[in-house]
Length: 208
Image (cartoon, rainbow, N blue to C red; front, side, top):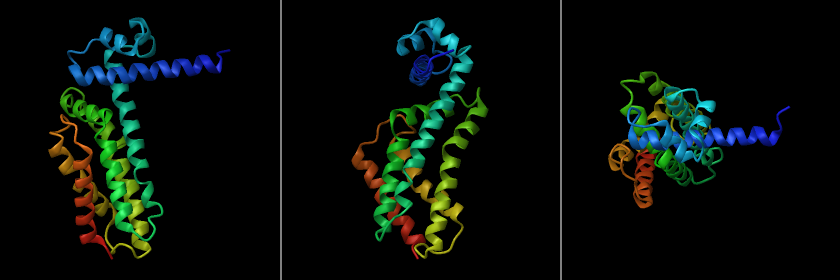
């Protein structure tokens, strides 16, 4: 019987390989990346990579999917301030905006963004996979939060899905521009300015 420690070690090693794969693929692109470099980055032997992920394409797909799950989960956590926003809705919305921008501009998120669209011609299904696990999942949960705020009289009556989409657009548009489509790290002060402007614009349109 496999021990819990051995199982944990296998899971950790697989995660290390997926993290290394995302880094190398983002740096080299799919065609130029090699499994040996991924193994070296993960500090494992090359056969170990193949033991966990059978070939380069599987490794690429699994690395993208795992990164999308992580980024999507972090983005959902950013909505926590809207569970119970208290008296200062603007402050809670700004905090959510700041957390979302932070989650979407870290190294993993930027690498995921670059890879998804740079390799879209060869892996078109991955665009849908990433969208489902990140943007669409986030928008659905945000719409639920906004619907609850509408029912409590904090926001004016509107389609919560549209409101969620517009709030996210107020964040993603400036972030895309300032990050040069994911190729530049945006300083915290700039992220805060984007969050403040998005919140102000959104509440001007939707505050009850």
